[in-house]
Image (cartoon, rainbow, N blue to C red):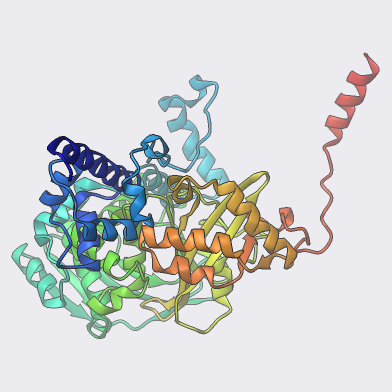
Length: 520
């Protein structure tokens, strides 16, 4: 029989272990409570009861321990082991995975000099103020891991954290804010822009100060897009007082990088203002339609399926863009890609290199990225992939789910959401390099793609259950593949381009080395 002292000690160690597992996997008490309830509604603990367990004030039942063990992929016996050494340190800190460049000497990067140099640099490279703003905004997103609590709170105040919202709900919010809706007819048209192949382009909506929102009648048949556009203009009213200083909402065409009423070819500060406002309004709209806590629970219920939004009238793009903002796991990336290789939207909270630039296409992108493969399929079903990314000596392991879709103008594009698996492996005391090497060896034996070894597959499937991301297991059932940033530096044993291209050393290096050697 347990003594009172023994029960207190038992409660302390069980609670400490559960809390450590929860923390190292970035789950809140509410997250863990929801996960438990989803498995067993009767045995799942409330947030307050779970807190008492973690603080040693209650002893969890055997059934609850089984549920927690299932969530974190542990044996129940592990919880009764009073060793603390193997889980005391959180191996997945939340700092940004995107590395920067040391700016030395520092005086050359003073604010005054940058203000003088940047406009000239942009003008000489043909970069517009709006394109430059997109790079700055992306860096801002990535450094904050796509989490902007002020915008979240503003959206929650307006929407009351209701989820899901239908079209009438969003229209009621607009009406309460004094917005008036006008409808117009405008069919898609061909837009060549700065490319040889024209794409369809459609004006979806625009804002007319101080309080009128114009919506394209074509949105009536697309309620998921209608909700987002209207929420976007609600954001402008809430955040900027409806002053009208923002871009129309368009789909398709070739994005030239300028706001639509711009005339000057030079950098315009207003371009940067419009780009930032577009981002703010878009983020607010997403938070209004998918408030963080209920949407996080929704994604957990559906194992982060990218098409889960079909059930509640949300576009796949919105669902996938919100995953990095609401997921407990911070190491995400997201691409929205148009053929043959134009990135319209990019987020890299896990530091994944870009397969293309998002302003210009590169000459030799690696053709094995999931987004490239999806360009060549007509299927609209999501597909998963496990990838080993090699860039020089750097090795990384990613999984993603991609889906081919069409924008409001009818153009085909590919959406891709993925995560870096290495931090999740480290969190379970698994050396990610050993896992990556095993997958890479199998891929090289298969010419660049290969079956995932059984032991490694079991590791990754376990990670998928801990993170509650269903498409990790789906990716494990398919051959993994080796990818890289550029085909010219392909790391495969059998080079993608055939013979490995020779890299010629600069002649000045040869001259320097020969002179130094002869003087010794």
